[in-house]
Every structure is written in C-alpha cells, then in structure tokens.
Image 1 (cartoon, rainbow, N blue to C red):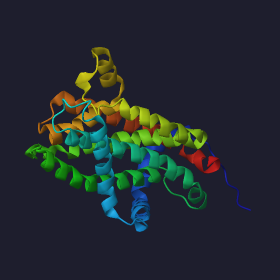
Image 2: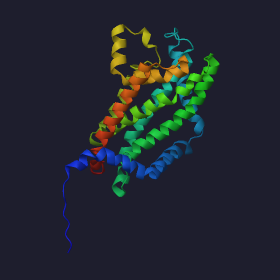
Image 3: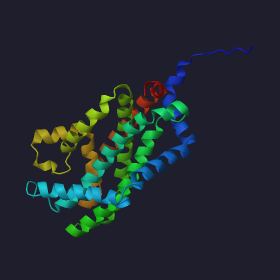
Image 4: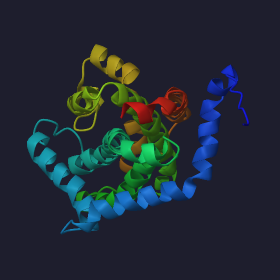
Length: 274
C-alpha cells in the first residue's frame, strides 16, 4: 500500500495572496458566470428591468433634493451635485454589502466545488460596475436639465472609477472575512453605512462644516477624497490636481492590498465556518 507523506510548509501561507491571484485568473470563466448570474437575477423578475438601475438613483436624488435644497441652497445646480456623489456612494455601498452576502450565501457552493474565495467579491464589483455605467444616463440627463455643462474632463472619469473599484474590493474583502466569523457584522454594517453616508459630503458641501469637522472628515474618512475625485471631472468640469489624484489612489491601493492579503490568508477556513 502506497504511503503519503504530508509536509507542512510555512511559506505556503505567506504566498497565499499571490496564489489567489493565479486562481482568479484560472477560474475567470467561472467568475464571469457568477457575474452573469447576478445580473440576470437582478433584472429577470423586475418589471422595469434595466430601467430600474437608472430610476433608483434618480428617485433618491429627487427626494434628497426636495428635502435639503432649502438647507443647502448655496450649492449651485444642487440635483446634479447630489447625483454625482450619490453614484459613487451607491457603488461602494452596494458592492461591499453584496460581497458579504454572496460569500455567506455561497457557502454551500464552496463545500461542493473548489473556486477562489475572492470570486464572490469580484463578481459583486463587476455587477456594481455595470450598474454604475447604466446610472451615468440619468446623470447626463440631470446635468443637462440643470444647466451643468458636460466638459471634456469627463475623460478622466475612469480614474475615480478605478479608485472606487480598488477601495470597494479591498474593503469588501475585509468585511466578508469578518462576516464569516461574526455573522452580526452584516447587520451592523447596514446601520454603519447609513451613518457613514452622512459623514461624507454627498448631500452637503464640506465647506459649510466647522474647520475641525472638515479636517476630521477629510483626514479620517477615506470615501471623502474618492467621492471628491469622482465629482471633479463631472460636476466641477475640472482636471484633478496631483494631490487630488494621489491621495484617493493611494488610499484605495492600500485598502486593496490589505484586504486581499487579509482575506486570502483566511480563505481556506471559510468552507468550514459558513
């Protein structure tokens, strides 16, 4: 009878994040199927279908505009200001929440077949990206209706979208890992994300805040610089300065690296805990 010898190699654990990248590429077609499933499931039973993705942020913008237009009336073309920030926030909120839900509900699949654990978060990012692109349609309509000129600076839009993808993926992986060990994280996050939104200058300009509050938000809130970078080429119609690019890009890259490393080094345990 042939005997097998099992050897523990401590280096394997340190190389796990790199191995996860290789597995993502190897199982890229499976990830595309997960992405297709998420998109089809989202729109298959919806009466409005794809139109809902465009009407949802538009409806939220209308409600917020009616509620806060008198309070923050100093902001020119307020509906366009809200929607330009709301689009970036919705991407972050939806993708991070979907990353947790997909991993927890996909636990049964992990026990039956092998697949990279990061596949659920990546498919959530892909679905969010599709929704973000579709939501650009109502944004253009609102900008034209409110007199905001669409300038050539919109060609810089892929840059803030890249920052959104990196930050959301990294943060979503960290949340997903904690949600596996502590199921209440998902419920707590739904509460925290609402508070986080109001601590981000989406419905109000940061200039109205006291100096201390403005410094705290700009320093401690990573979404502040990302939302600001998203707004600059669209709403402001300007080219972002080097600090306005480097700060959110660096924050997003750090979160992506930390999130990928943290998640990958614990991913082998998920199938036994979900």
